[in-house]
Image 1: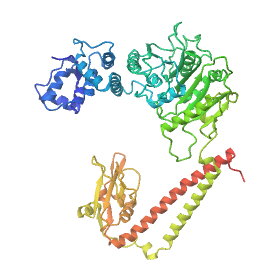
Image 2: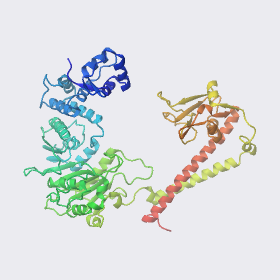
Image 3: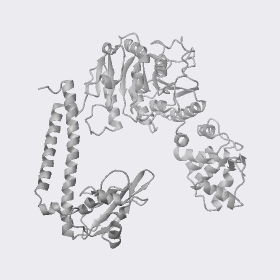
Image 4: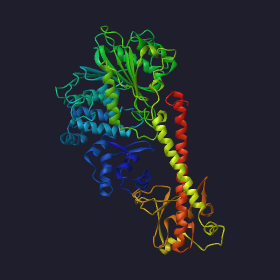
Length: 631
């Protein structure tokens, strides 16, 4: 008997691991293929049970893992993937168990097995992750490491609110019981909050967030936390008269909203720091967060960098500074959250309590700054610990050590100019080797050594016998063989990047077959790299061919031109058509040594150019900021 779950042709293709064309062929060629039970003529749906039975009989369906079977049933539910996931979560939480007559009854036993094997909370996390993977563009999630950093910046609090909670990543990070995916949101000896409050405009997300928190908050170290997630637009919904103020607000609000309620909320009492402009929805979220805090409470918001600099927001930023609400602006490295190309900012705010004076200094930090050119960026864990350490020192009222290009505390009065631009990079002194006199001296010394090496290589070529210099391309024509002929004779092997991995070894010759680039010899100690497209690897037999001789002649302009073909607007080299002279091995080695010296000379010249640019820019920077004297 069918359980009512329906699947499309695309879903059948995923079940069997084939393309949709294969499913169409099965429908035409197999009279016993299940008949459509719904959908339209152009997009029919089929009974999942009948399809699985047919595929199994045909030997086209392997037994799927338990998690995958549940995902398929939820995805194919007639009510929709999201609502079905909600009801599955309610069953796991014991709030609304699935009955035998329920369309999802067939999934009940599998859900119970998942709960037995992993626990109800972990089972729901797995199903929720599958749902978000199937809808990657529909939802903007806060990555767990970023959420954990925000929770640790806010510190432990009795009650936590996220007014744009989405699927509750930030609230989970604030709660952070042992074993949650949020991990490290709170220290092991901190007390989790006793109340978690959320607001979310999307009713489905609000229900998923409530279930997620209910399942997770029930396994806390000090007992279950109260969970209150409401399906409402936090900005447009006036807080109830009895709405509790909270100790902590964590928020990753939607960015660049235009229709956030500017006109109807013009006289809202939450705008204690000024009415945000229509284009400043993020500053509306900032003020909403502060309004929901108890005096002395902390808010941490993840915002786009433009919020710190747009002219339309300068009055609100100035008021936040004057009244002591804004305590820190921390620029994270790109990739902390979507959009991943931007260095998003964390704003840390504290609601004035009236007992202490307004903060006189603002912590500014650029977590991606202060690195020398070419220096590897730190890991996320190192970045998070650096940000936390600076904030905790500043929050304790102590002086934060100034780090050029990375961290400083500035007097608020110095920031209250016409722009009130709070972008950390604008106010931090430049850092890195370019502005350091000692580092510049090192660059200059390396530049001089490299220049001397290029002169030595040039002198070696000038001292070569005239007979050797005059022989070759301009002398008598040499007998030749193509790479294809040499491969057939066993003198070398030809490898291309295919599904079978090909790794390089010392003495191999690698040549790009498309785009720019030149043939090169894999040096000792540099083998083991996997060959990628569009590269080709030649492996000469050392008893027959010298590797540098091969690489040098493959770089010849005439050689690559006669072996090139054109497809569309791009040229491609047919490696087997490339030609090599037929020479004794000793003569090959003579050519190979000259080619090797030329390659070394080319590398040295390239390094001279890089060092020259670095030295010149460093001198400009040093003279401009005073670290290098003019005389």
